[in-house]
Length: 401
Image (cartoon, rainbow, N blue to C red; front, side, top):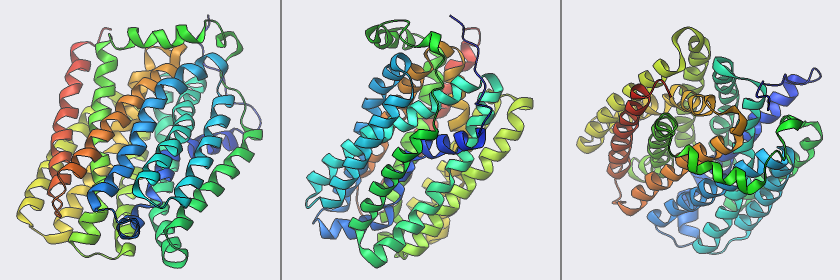
């Protein structure tokens, strides 16, 4: 079985990459739109801030667990059909969120929304691996993530404006529209899985490949390093609305601007990563990003626990921590996908499940420890950063296999 990458279609390659970047951004689309509305939703649904954080944790449960299904299915049946099914589920879940009248119902439909969004993210990553390999794959992932980062940059700003004019339910109605538009774009999305790879084994055989993957220390190192960073990231996502708006009394517009600055940091780091990855190597950049995240997260903990610098003492180290996604996420994904191109969907799924499963822990810890201050968020970020760096030891000790 040939594992050589195929070339992007000669016609409209930029349109293909544009569609892939939007699909990869569905995780951010699903959450960042309603972040400015979380305090308002908390009051409307009579749910404390800790319970609202579980709308993110519930989303992550659906997102992480369903990756383990979508990956092998896409390796067996191809990429396009699972993406189409995922878009239908995402649209239905978004509609349910718009109609929810209780926190329990909202969480349930967030899980359905996540199952659909997951197909788009995990399979889009696999499609990049179908098209590119080696440092070129890491470069393309960084480039696509730079484009994708526009979504979380704009989403809180747009969500805040929708909230101001039409209320929080209209935010989820807008997500229904996004799902419908992307379903229409499927006519421009080609199948990237080579024909000789499709249906070469039963789908059960594809699922059984997970047992082999979890015995690979290098893969666990890459997945674990990215996963722990994701735990810190989702602690930030679930805790920052209350840290900025409720604790520091920032307006929803200021919150959106501060959140957006973090995305600018990610975009900048992604562009630097894309330029340096060929000469430096993805592993060196990954280690650098993880080391910096440890330093700035410890800085964050000191500022938050002493309240030094107020809102800006919290923002600066948070900005630097979030920016490190540009070095950690793309390089950890590329490293995980590198050794097994024949099962790119399955590897992408397992890695994504570890990433977003760790996010459950990060956002869940913020919800469980919620005390009305940013301290649970900062503490979780600090612990997650230390563990992320520790996982990289598995990669350094197993460079040969």
